[in-house]
Structure formats: C-alpha cells, structure tokens
Length: 197
Image (cartoon, rainbow, N blue to C red; front, side, top):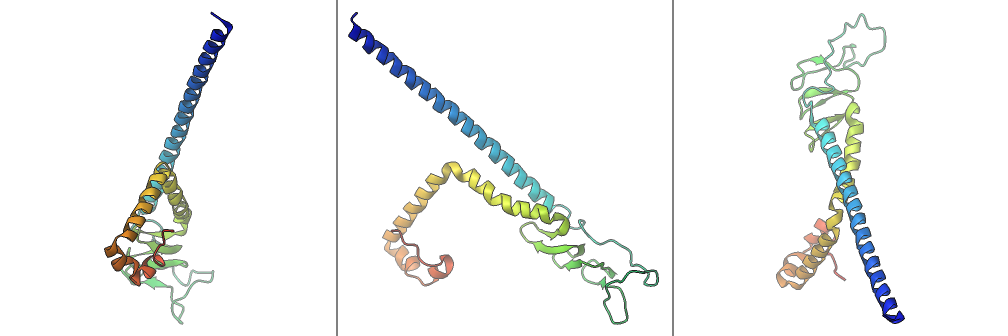
C-alpha cells in the first residue's frame, strides 16, 4: 500500500465521517425544532381554548347585579338618580323585573340581564365582556393571531404557492376575468383587483 493509497483511503473515510456527522446534526436540530414547535403550538392552542371557555362561561350569572334595592333614607353617600324626584335607578327590561341598577351597570339586551362594569356583548363569545373579564378578552385577542401564525408556519410556503397559482390561473381564465377581475365590485370586496406582476 502506497502513501497515495493511504491518503485516498483516509480522505474517503474523513468525508464519510463528516457526512454522517452532518446528517446526525441536522437530524438532532430537526428533532429539537419540531419539539419546540409542538410544545409552543400545544401551549398556545391550550391557552386560547382555556381563555375562550373562561369567557364563554357564566352567560346568565357573571357580574350580574343581584343587590337588593337600598332604602333612600339610609343612604349617606351620593347616589345615581333616575328621576328628578331622586328615585334610584331600576331596570325593567328582560328578566330584571325592576331590580336595582347600581352605578356602572348596564342592561345587555342579548343576555337579558344587567351587568356590573359592562363593556360590550361579544357575539363570537356569546357572552358579555365586563371589567372583570376584560384582561382575559384582550389576551385572547392578542394570542389568537399569534397562535394561528405559529400553527400554520410549517405550511406557509405551500399556502403561498397555492394562492399564487390560483391567482395566476384565475387571471388566465376568461370567465374569471369577466365575472371577477373586470367587475367593479371586486374593488369593494378586496380593495381592487389583485395584480400578479
């Protein structure tokens, strides 16, 4: 065996060692990245689901004003009046049936109850958002797009490729051009026809 053969053999063995080491490193990195992806999506989706359930629960019970009507004579602090005679505010809407309506209480016509610290009724939750649930509501609004983007990250390239292909195909179709791209309503629906160039 000559020096040249030994060098060739050691060079070949070194290349295989580097190749195998690179493959192992890529595999380990892929496992770690996939693990982080699974962990983050599971945590984010669980958080969104938990917040959503928390906000949906208690449609008829959370922050409902169930205080008895106080005697006006016993009140020492200023109070909110409904009439010029100084009567306390009561609600006669829905299921309230003349119950006292403390300050910062508003009637939700969708739920049919008066809520303390009422902000708004959210149709996507099917419940009212009050001051006590406002932080959870804002967290849900901020967390939902992040969760969506993290969850679709692995398929973003495929989605963009398919969307561009659909756009290109629709521009080449004469029927789609007549019905959509040349129609004035496409300006209203998506701020104008999309150009593919």
